[in-house]
Image (cartoon, rainbow, N blue to C red; front, top):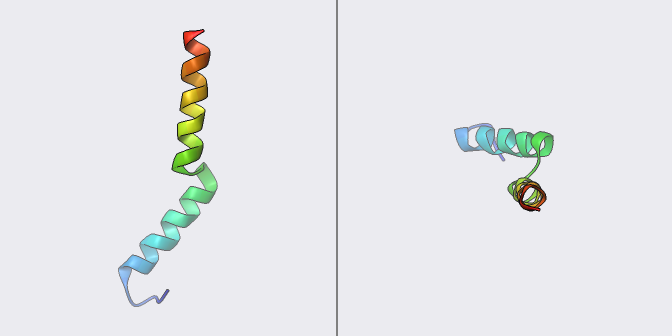
Length: 40
């Protein structure tokens, strides 16, 4: 990645946020587990 384009900044920031808060797959699995626990 180069620092010349704004997309490089956004990609680095999105990667950092995903590392801190978890990926989409992580949150979908968590939501699924919470939904099944509430239904039972």
